[in-house]
Length: 322
Image 1: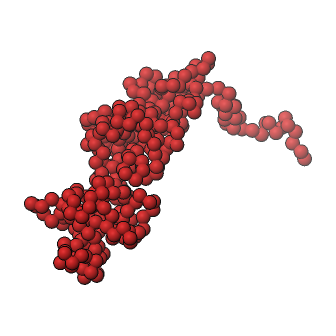
Image 2: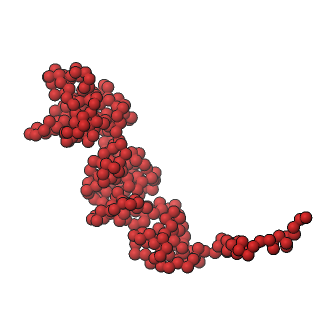
Image 3: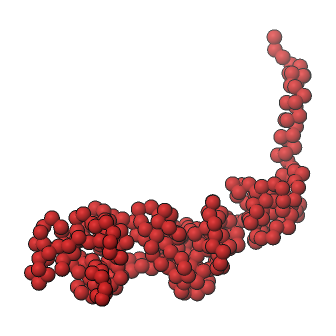
């Protein structure tokens, strides 16, 4: 027997009916629950609405407050409509708020911390300019966000307004190859297949280029395994057991002084033979060739390479002529 609409309505329990009516009302009204000021955590996954209406997210505590002490995701260009509802940012407003790195202790001094991504306003990226000064500026929106080791664009270079289109925690550096995004770091553990050793000024460091252990760091005729016409293969000065692909920084010839291998021409390595001599660029050779890669003036000896400073585990394939 079919059930009439009237009898069918009687089958709905009071609890179900209450929930249905609540859901319908919620879809028509605003999100305005009873909230105690500073007691509700911000919903940072909610985009432009981390807090109920009338509240803003205080970023230092991640709690919803009516009058936060710092700028939260609903401040800045966000306005209200005639009903007092908060308007979502338009595309012209730029990216959403940048989240600080989780479980990261920021530096106690300085304008901001580019590794932890703290100290700047909601939509500003903490970075460092080419003069080594910490900056807080909105990123360049065109092409944003560029990723690690991707090409990038610098705007207002060497000024306090300098910015780029690398993602948060990255900075665009012109390194002789082309402008690329490098990752801020505090230790080698913050990097993947690279050391945290490239100084960018202001007491800040970035992860170096990644290791490419399949390339060959010999003379220009057999310097293979690196992508791009500007790239060359070098023995890593920071980790002698590895090789890297990078651009010559100072392009020093044989016997020129250097501080790291990429200060030398391709096919050379920066070697520190201890004081009083300064590190110099010396020819790379294959250890298994018994010095046949070396010119006769070097006495035909291929020595193990142990990096800068010396004393690291030696490269197992390549050394230097001396």
